[in-house]
Image (cartoon, rainbow, N blue to C red):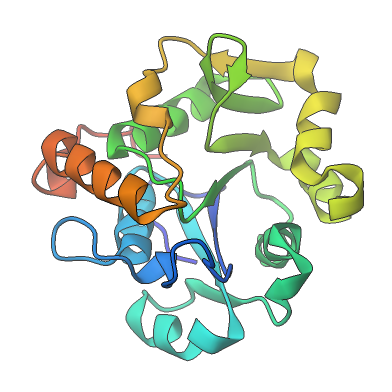
Length: 220
């Protein structure tokens, strides 16, 4: 995992071990903005936003991403065919027991850097167990869970509706981030057409460099 000076205890796990069958290409390697592929861009955006970042990848891509991403960031899921939950468990297992907050994002659900910054600030201030962007009655992504839910995350499985069941069980302890812009939280890159739309949106709405983002938190 990689961190900036303000990220101690605040962790992000990117799930990037899937086969991307509907896209017919590896989503993590999709050309994105700033001359970067999607996964490295997300790692940089989350890290700059105050999150120690881990990316869970497949055996076929591990050597590439281990060499491409910052040291310690890439984590291997040896059996990604078991489903997305297997990647989540692989990532969470690598986190320290003292993790305060855990942000979970699929690689095909990028968000504007300002949302990662905002979630970090909210996590620093909130006492709820879960923080989610909210659009009317729907939960958005990424989700942020308190470190006290680490053991519950490690115990989830596909047969019990996985992460959704955990979120449902703690819905009364969830803080729904107000004023979440649906345009910022809608992207799920499942088809080439949606990818092209998302790429155009991010090119238009992202600041030219991550360094242009406002400061996330005061020094810890």
